[in-house]
Figure (cartoon, rainbow, N blue to C red):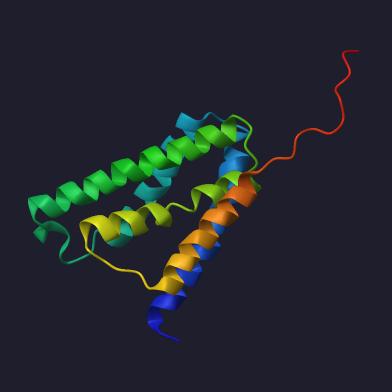
Length: 147
């Protein structure tokens, strides 16, 4: 196995655990409050990354892109937290929002001229189908009583 796969597998385990913690958090505090505490979690990690030798040698464009990515990440997290706070099931909302790479696929094909094979496009279609199946909710089959 190549080295990158280990990092990817660790990301899956960590982000999978985060999904549970996000739901538990929104059961106890508001979505904006949870976003603040998640940000504190990032800040706790800063000393680990501040030792990066090229941290301060970045171009203005690199800093802008990194900052914009952080803003978009924070907004995405807040919207996920808001959906959980409004009653979404973690088992549905977290995997559904985890389909965000499909947006990356489209943007990469448009802006970076990247191409996908036929098999990769089948994977995109399967991911879309899985998102539809995950988010489908059966209508309530038992009538509610007005008692």
